[in-house]
Amino acid sequence: GIQVEQSPPDLILQEGANSTLRCNFSDSVNNLQWFHQNPWGQLINLFYIPSGTKQNGRLSATTVATERYSLLYISSSQTTDSGVYFCAVDPYNTDKLIFGTGTRLQVFP
Amino acid sequence: DAGVIQSPRHEVTEMGQEVTLRCKPISGHNSLFWYRQTMMRGLELLIYFNNNVPIDDSGMPEDRFSAKMPNASFSTLKIQPSEPRDSAVYFCASSLGYGIGSVTQYFGPGTRLLVL
Image (cartoon, rainbow over all chains, first blue to last red; front, side, top):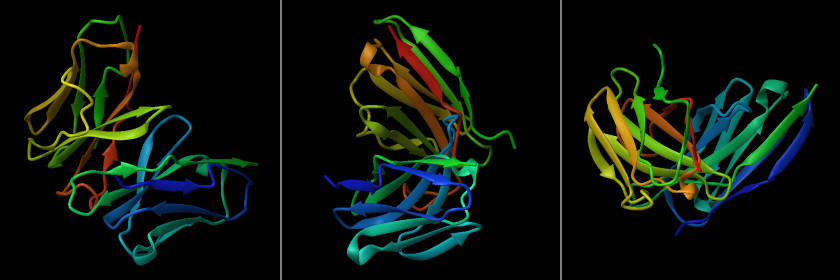
Protein backbone atom coordinates (compact mmCIF):
# COMPACT_ATOMS: atom_id res chain seq x y z
CA GLY A 1 0.00 0.00 0.00
CA ILE A 2 0.88 3.65 -0.19
CA GLN A 3 3.53 4.99 2.18
CA VAL A 4 3.18 8.43 3.74
CA GLU A 5 6.26 9.86 5.39
CA GLN A 6 6.57 13.11 7.24
CA SER A 7 9.65 15.07 8.19
CA PRO A 8 11.04 16.16 10.47
CA PRO A 9 9.53 13.94 13.18
CA ASP A 10 10.19 16.62 15.80
CA LEU A 11 10.70 20.35 15.59
CA ILE A 12 11.43 22.84 18.33
CA LEU A 13 11.11 26.55 17.61
CA GLN A 14 11.16 29.84 19.38
CA GLU A 15 8.13 32.04 18.97
CA GLY A 16 8.35 34.13 15.82
CA ALA A 17 10.36 31.62 13.80
CA ASN A 18 9.21 30.15 10.49
CA SER A 19 9.08 26.45 9.68
CA THR A 20 8.44 24.03 6.85
CA LEU A 21 6.96 20.58 7.32
CA ARG A 22 7.14 18.00 4.57
CA CYS A 23 4.92 15.10 3.55
CA ASN A 24 6.09 12.55 0.96
CA PHE A 25 3.82 9.90 -0.49
CA SER A 26 4.74 6.91 -2.58
CA ASP A 27 1.85 6.71 -5.06
CA SER A 28 -0.71 8.83 -6.88
CA VAL A 29 -3.46 10.36 -4.79
CA ASN A 30 -6.84 11.99 -5.33
CA ASN A 31 -6.33 14.43 -2.52
CA LEU A 32 -4.17 15.40 0.40
CA GLN A 33 -5.12 16.97 3.70
CA TRP A 34 -3.21 18.57 6.56
CA PHE A 35 -4.41 18.29 10.17
CA HIS A 36 -3.28 19.80 13.45
CA GLN A 37 -3.69 17.99 16.77
CA ASN A 38 -3.23 20.33 19.70
CA PRO A 39 -1.62 19.26 22.99
CA TRP A 40 -5.08 18.48 24.39
CA GLY A 41 -5.78 16.04 21.58
CA GLN A 42 -8.22 18.06 19.51
CA LEU A 43 -7.89 17.47 15.76
CA ILE A 44 -8.48 20.25 13.27
CA ASN A 45 -8.56 19.99 9.51
CA LEU A 46 -6.23 22.70 8.16
CA PHE A 47 -6.25 22.23 4.39
CA TYR A 48 -7.30 19.87 1.69
CA ILE A 49 -4.97 20.47 -1.18
CA PRO A 50 -4.59 18.02 -4.08
CA SER A 51 -2.30 20.41 -5.92
CA GLY A 52 -1.17 24.01 -5.94
CA THR A 53 -0.97 26.38 -3.00
CA LYS A 54 -3.45 27.51 -0.40
CA GLN A 55 -3.07 30.03 2.39
CA ASN A 56 -4.93 30.58 5.61
CA GLY A 57 -3.48 33.31 7.78
CA ARG A 58 0.04 32.37 8.89
CA LEU A 59 -0.31 28.89 7.43
CA SER A 60 0.09 27.90 3.82
CA ALA A 61 0.40 24.60 2.02
CA THR A 62 1.75 23.55 -1.34
CA THR A 63 1.28 20.19 -3.00
CA VAL A 64 3.28 19.06 -6.04
CA ALA A 65 1.33 15.98 -6.98
CA THR A 66 3.59 15.01 -9.88
CA GLU A 67 6.54 14.82 -7.48
CA ARG A 68 4.46 13.30 -4.69
CA TYR A 69 5.06 15.71 -1.87
CA SER A 70 3.37 18.46 0.04
CA LEU A 71 4.76 21.21 2.26
CA LEU A 72 3.14 23.03 5.15
CA TYR A 73 4.58 26.45 5.98
CA ILE A 74 4.10 28.08 9.34
CA SER A 75 5.21 31.69 9.54
CA SER A 76 5.79 33.74 12.69
CA SER A 77 5.06 30.71 14.85
CA GLN A 78 3.15 31.11 18.10
CA THR A 79 2.95 28.88 21.15
CA THR A 80 -0.57 27.94 20.09
CA ASP A 81 0.90 26.29 16.98
CA SER A 82 2.36 23.56 19.18
CA GLY A 83 1.08 20.05 18.65
CA VAL A 84 1.33 17.36 16.02
CA TYR A 85 0.80 18.03 12.33
CA PHE A 86 -0.45 15.16 10.19
CA CYS A 87 -0.82 14.85 6.47
CA ALA A 88 -3.25 12.31 5.06
CA VAL A 89 -3.73 11.10 1.51
CA ASP A 90 -6.62 9.65 -0.39
CA PRO A 91 -5.00 7.15 -2.81
CA TYR A 92 -6.35 6.72 -6.33
CA ASN A 93 -9.12 4.17 -6.74
CA THR A 94 -9.68 3.73 -3.04
CA ASP A 95 -12.05 5.03 -0.42
CA LYS A 96 -9.32 5.29 2.16
CA LEU A 97 -7.51 8.04 4.00
CA ILE A 98 -3.94 7.13 4.97
CA PHE A 99 -2.21 9.22 7.61
CA GLY A 100 1.45 10.01 7.97
CA THR A 101 3.25 9.55 11.29
CA GLY A 102 3.17 13.25 12.05
CA THR A 103 5.56 16.06 12.92
CA ARG A 104 5.57 17.11 16.57
CA LEU A 105 6.08 20.87 16.86
CA GLN A 106 6.94 22.66 20.07
CA VAL A 107 7.00 26.44 20.07
CA PHE A 108 8.54 28.15 23.10
CA PRO A 109 8.05 31.77 24.11
CA ASP B 1 -23.40 24.85 16.65
CA ALA B 2 -22.24 22.43 19.34
CA GLY B 3 -19.80 20.64 17.09
CA VAL B 4 -19.36 16.88 16.98
CA ILE B 5 -20.31 15.32 20.29
CA GLN B 6 -18.83 12.06 21.53
CA SER B 7 -19.66 10.06 24.59
CA PRO B 8 -18.32 8.88 26.86
CA ARG B 9 -15.15 10.96 26.97
CA HIS B 10 -13.37 8.28 28.98
CA GLU B 11 -14.12 4.59 29.34
CA VAL B 12 -12.34 2.01 31.44
CA THR B 13 -13.50 -1.56 31.10
CA GLU B 14 -12.31 -5.08 31.61
CA MET B 15 -11.30 -7.46 28.88
CA GLY B 16 -14.27 -9.32 27.46
CA GLN B 17 -16.80 -6.60 28.14
CA GLU B 18 -18.84 -4.89 25.46
CA VAL B 19 -18.00 -1.26 24.77
CA THR B 20 -20.25 1.19 22.91
CA LEU B 21 -18.98 4.56 21.77
CA ARG B 22 -21.43 7.19 20.61
CA CYS B 23 -21.26 10.10 18.22
CA LYS B 24 -23.59 12.91 17.28
CA PRO B 25 -22.44 14.67 14.11
CA ILE B 26 -22.94 18.32 13.31
CA SER B 27 -26.50 18.92 12.21
CA GLY B 28 -26.84 18.92 8.43
CA HIS B 29 -23.61 17.05 7.79
CA ASN B 30 -24.02 14.01 5.58
CA SER B 31 -20.76 12.14 6.11
CA LEU B 32 -19.48 10.59 9.32
CA PHE B 33 -16.10 9.03 10.05
CA TRP B 34 -14.72 6.87 12.85
CA TYR B 35 -10.97 6.94 13.57
CA ARG B 36 -8.69 5.22 16.05
CA GLN B 37 -5.42 6.66 17.34
CA THR B 38 -2.70 4.67 19.09
CA MET B 39 0.97 5.24 19.71
CA MET B 40 1.89 2.15 17.72
CA ARG B 41 -0.35 2.58 14.68
CA GLY B 42 -1.02 6.31 14.63
CA LEU B 43 -4.29 7.57 13.19
CA GLU B 44 -6.40 5.06 11.28
CA LEU B 45 -9.72 5.47 9.52
CA LEU B 46 -11.98 2.63 10.65
CA ILE B 47 -15.18 3.26 8.71
CA TYR B 48 -17.16 6.07 7.15
CA PHE B 49 -20.77 6.70 6.22
CA ASN B 50 -22.41 8.81 3.52
CA ASN B 51 -26.07 9.59 4.19
CA ASN B 52 -26.09 6.94 6.95
CA VAL B 53 -24.83 4.22 4.58
CA PRO B 54 -21.44 2.60 5.29
CA ILE B 55 -19.13 3.22 2.34
CA ASP B 56 -15.91 1.56 3.39
CA ASP B 57 -15.35 -0.56 6.47
CA SER B 58 -12.08 -2.16 5.41
CA GLY B 59 -10.34 -0.31 8.20
CA MET B 60 -12.34 -2.08 10.86
CA PRO B 61 -9.73 -4.27 12.50
CA GLU B 62 -11.77 -7.35 13.32
CA ASP B 63 -15.26 -8.76 13.47
CA ARG B 64 -15.35 -7.69 17.08
CA PHE B 65 -15.82 -4.13 15.80
CA SER B 66 -19.11 -2.95 14.36
CA ALA B 67 -20.52 0.48 13.53
CA LYS B 68 -24.03 1.66 12.85
CA MET B 69 -25.68 4.88 11.85
CA PRO B 70 -29.43 4.44 12.32
CA ASN B 71 -30.17 8.06 11.48
CA ALA B 72 -28.45 11.27 10.43
CA SER B 73 -27.86 12.43 13.98
CA PHE B 74 -26.40 9.38 15.69
CA SER B 75 -23.76 6.72 15.21
CA THR B 76 -22.28 4.01 17.40
CA LEU B 77 -19.05 2.07 17.36
CA LYS B 78 -19.25 -1.18 19.28
CA ILE B 79 -16.48 -3.50 20.38
CA GLN B 80 -17.56 -6.92 21.57
CA PRO B 81 -15.71 -8.50 23.25
CA SER B 82 -13.10 -5.89 24.06
CA GLU B 83 -9.40 -6.70 24.39
CA PRO B 84 -6.48 -4.75 25.92
CA ARG B 85 -5.09 -4.01 22.43
CA ASP B 86 -8.26 -2.04 21.68
CA SER B 87 -7.11 0.63 24.11
CA ALA B 88 -6.89 3.84 22.11
CA VAL B 89 -8.49 7.19 21.50
CA TYR B 90 -11.46 6.89 19.17
CA PHE B 91 -12.45 9.97 17.19
CA CYS B 92 -15.63 10.68 15.32
CA ALA B 93 -15.73 13.33 12.59
CA SER B 94 -18.41 14.67 10.31
CA SER B 95 -18.41 16.67 7.10
CA LEU B 96 -20.75 18.43 4.74
CA GLY B 97 -20.32 16.76 1.39
CA TYR B 98 -19.14 13.44 0.12
CA GLY B 99 -15.89 11.72 -0.52
CA ILE B 100 -13.08 10.83 1.80
CA GLY B 101 -10.36 13.28 0.89
CA SER B 102 -11.99 16.37 -0.53
CA VAL B 103 -14.14 17.64 2.30
CA THR B 104 -13.34 19.43 5.52
CA GLN B 105 -13.88 17.12 8.45
CA TYR B 106 -14.84 18.39 11.89
CA PHE B 107 -13.64 16.20 14.74
CA GLY B 108 -15.16 15.40 18.07
CA PRO B 109 -13.06 15.49 21.25
CA GLY B 110 -12.50 11.74 21.19
CA THR B 111 -13.22 8.88 23.57
CA ARG B 112 -10.24 7.57 25.48
CA LEU B 113 -10.73 3.83 25.94
CA LEU B 114 -8.72 1.70 28.32
CA VAL B 115 -9.31 -2.05 28.35
CA LEU B 116 -7.75 -3.78 31.33
